[in-house]
Length: 357
Ligand code: GLY
Image 1 (tube, helix red, strand yellow):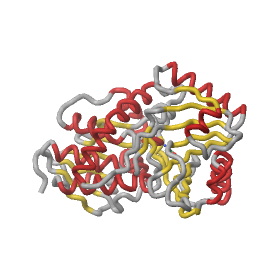
Image 2 (tube, helix red, strand yellow; image 1 turned 90 degrees about the horizontal axis):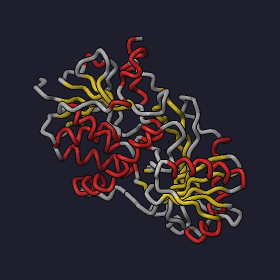
Image 3 (tube, protein in one colour; image 1 turned 180 degrees about the vertical axis):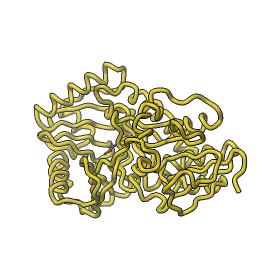
Image 4 (cartoon, rainbow, N blue to C red; image 1 turned 120 degrees about the vertical axis):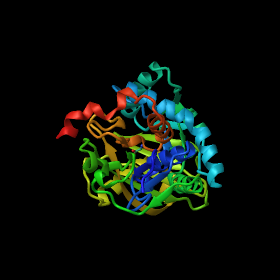
């Protein structure tokens, strides 16, 4: 039976679980529904927390949200780690942006100039300075930049930790599929269903396929400490080192919904990765995977009340930024449930026409 103030959350990915955890901390009775908890995009995500190096032209409001959420990460990771009794793999060594050729460097410098112009912390570095920080970088690397506040977390530790903390605090997680929101018996329903949010709400959220590889270093340590965002002869790649020797190599960005790992994508990712860090050619290729980012027409998330559906709140459409935006999204949704204002540039009403159909 539903009670006053009950909250049902559709989706047990990082966003849904973080909202659940924060809601139960405010004294709500919370149920999370998901047919396969933790099996969405977060199961392959690299976990980069990159508000600076992922700030792109024309996305100022999104950048401000990314910066806000990234600033919440250290406290969020510490609180979660303590509540769940596990280390969520938060690492603060920073990110190096690395350009192989002169053309790559021209593109990197252009974006870095824009990012620095916003007042974001990013410093240019010549090739020798990059290699001083990471000796495994190829001798031919031209230059790039250092983004000291772009950090990382391990989503494969994060999601189980959120589940554990949420359940310990009193959240109920049920393995159930929701195909119609009107069947969910709760005063408030939060839709945090990633790409599945489109079918439930009518919002224009589409899958953007990402192919991701995982390598294992022969010596049990990756050989580099920074997250590397690389540009190699016009191809982009990121390399995320983890303790224990894993290196995450990502990712394609394809307007497709299939889950096929393709030979061409594996070749392109490995070519770019080994052009930048030649030693990776000796690492074992231990996993290939596909995730689907929930993309929106303006690349920004959808957070707020669903037009025409009292009691329904959306927390979805985080596209490339689901992990970094987890803490701020949870806080915004909980504030909203407790009577606060919706975060104006990101509310679903900007897509009201699509919702009305
Ligand atoms: N944020 C990294 C990606 O979406 O591939």
